[in-house]
Image 1 (cartoon, one colour):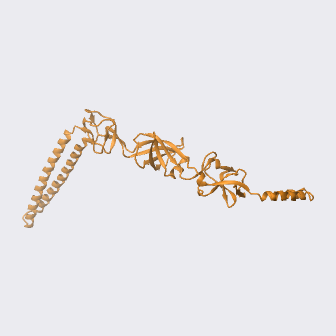
Image 2 (cartoon, rainbow, N blue to C red):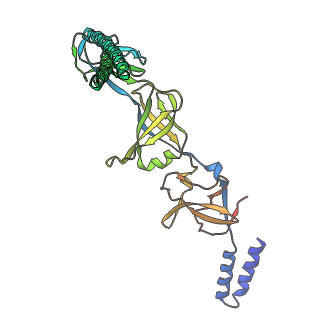
Length: 346
């Protein structure tokens, strides 16, 4: 108040010298005045917005289990909705023809083995005579060739035996993974052909969550570790596995795949994937426009500094990389300009 009265007296005295001196004195007084403001640390103001998208639990294996050999279906011991373990029988085929072929292949092995043994003994006798020079080279070559042929026949018989055994094994169609029976696609008594689907099985262990993420949310999703799947009040922590490098040009989004971090929901469950921003956000009310830029005023060494927030949108919280101890001017900011002197209100 004393300074104000003094400057007023000086101004009245300046009237004797002219109005110009009074105006100049007022300008000096205005330049010496600091704006009174209030400020709070970003840590006290920061918000961490959440975003969410519709999502569905999908299985990595939704398979139609097919026949590999031709045969009449003799049994389908599973029902729709049942859970099965890897190796459980799904379908059995009439396997008598393949079992007979296996017996024949085993008999062929025995015959080929006997021929091979005989050819080996005959060669050994001829080689003994050859050392005594009591036989011809032609007969020796013949016995060697016969042994080679016998060995080849034996190897071929083993291949045929293994093929017959494989066909017998394929008469029983087994679950390739732990799963849930979704459909029975064949009936007992029908003739199954190779490639004909028998049972539809969904893997109940290898599950992921699929959702379409807007392009403007991808960066925030990549930067956070706090992601979860909500379904009817149940919450399942997730981990972002991948974002498909493909953009849906109409919807302007990309598919994201999430892995369950702990327990998983059932295949086909619908819900929402929600994540919390990793970076602190300045509340929307604190964001201001100066020229063509949006940003906030921060207090630095008695001055107001305007910090541009490149990702800011009017009416929305804005992400920032400012330190949590940064003082954000909350009151008295509307008339400020960058670099203006400020004082904290008591």
